[in-house]
Amino acid sequence: MAIYEDIIKNHSAKFVPGGAAQNTARGAQYILPPSSVVYIGCIGSDHYGDQLLHAVHKAGLHVEYRRDESQPTGRCAVIITGHDRSLVTDLAAANCYKVEHLKQHWSLVQSAQIFYVGGYHLTVCPEAIEELGKEAVRDNKVFALSLSAPFIPAVFKSQLAAVMGYCDYLFGNEAEAGVYAESQGWSKGLKMEEIVMKIANLEGKVNEKRKRVVVITRGKEDTFVGVQGEEKVKEYSVERIDEKEIADTNGAGDAFAGGFLAGLVEGKDLDTCVKMASWLAKLSLTQTGADYPHPKQVYSGN
Figure 1: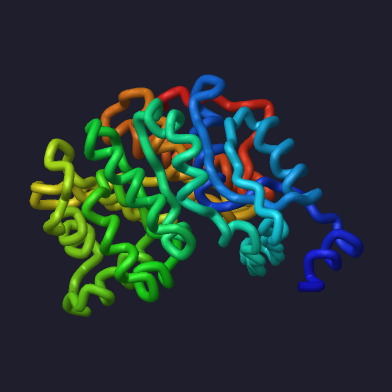
Figure 2 (figure 1 turned 60 degrees about the vertical axis):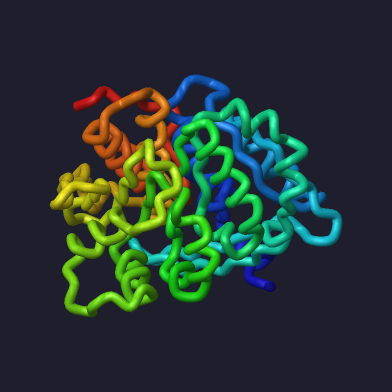
């Protein structure tokens, strides 16, 4: 726990708004017109909470936080060595979200057209995720979920299974997809392309009006996208970046999802959504922390 104060007192720490899903929300808002994105989560009634609130407002994000009186705002210390990183996280208030808070702000839920949930929230309040999933099915809205980390499909298998049926879009990287395959008892000899298609074609899709789309990033290698009912994955090259331009890889996957979701909001086709995702991920790599360049850059479609 002492690492947080040590970084602040003895090193040139940079404060950046965090939280995987909040990083994605800020990424989508970076591209979209003002007040396009609402983020809901939980913080403490403390200085860090106030600091976070100020930072996300500056980024143009509309937030409705639940303030927990017993736990401080969550923190993550990121130690960067070259292009490598080590994260030390104290979730604190982030572990204290309650579904009652979501219901208090149900008018925001009803006015939204796309829901995005970070997989980490499966460890906190699965009931809130299921409520969003049901709302998405009722009004044929988009429900998107990120696997977030390999331990989610490994350890929180039942919680993930309970919401997979709602998923119209599933984001992850190849490590997370590989662990998901293991959790399902699939053959270890499966290629990643086969895993992607098996996830896309999982039975139990609740909203049959939408096909499930699975988007799996693979670092520098092509991104794989599997669409329910299709035979093969689609492959997309990623935006290239000179290694000298990379400041920090932290949050690049969150940025990728943010760019993709912004494309969905704008009504773009799948190909364009992936290109926007790759473009925003590349921008995030040039920043320290899960951040985006200022002054704001505009996606040109090139």
